[in-house]
Every structure is written in C-alpha cells, then in structure tokens.
Image (cartoon, rainbow, N blue to C red):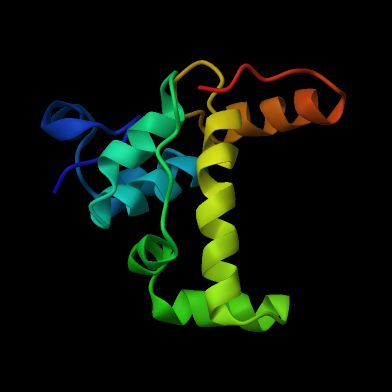
Length: 128
C-alpha cells in the first residue's frame, strides 16, 4: 500500500518500517495523511503538502478516508447532518494541511505545536 507525503513510497517504508507502532510515533498529521493514502488519495495529499495548487477533496472521499462510523460520530458531536460534516471537511482539509506544512514537509507533533504557537502569535505560514 502506498504512503502519502512524509511517508511516500516503498523506499521510505523500508527505511522507517511499516508498522503501525512506528507510524503512530511520527505524529498526528502524518497519521491523517496516511489515512489519505489508505483511501487511495495519495496524489491529493501530496498536492496539499507540496507547493502548487491544492487538489480538492469530495465529500465521498472524506467518508472513504475516515469511515462512516467516524463521520457519524463527528456529526453527532457537531450537531450537524453527516453530509454537512463531510462537505465541510472536504473543503477545509486541503487548506489546513497546506497551512500546516509550510516547508513542504509533514512536521512531527512537536514541530506542529511550535508552528501552532507561531501562528497564534500572528506569525505567517508559507503553506506547502
């Protein structure tokens, strides 16, 4: 199975191992991007991390990526219909990943926290 940016391709899997335990150690954002790959959306995720235009997501791709149960749980938490949750996530996710990968690389959780602090203080992110 292919991996998304930050975990691209077979060579990277060979270097870092393919175990779920090791993937968990790479950070939450990497886990999300890995979900893209598992859903067959590697090219789209790569576009969000790299420079250039972000490929859009469709609501059905969000469901394929997260699963129906997760969508239902999120919809219940948000008090919104599942279709609205899928549409909102499909619109927001490419932009969010782009903003969180300003150097074209997926940060680990520590780097992500530092980036969040910088953005909260009014710093700029260059977008991936």
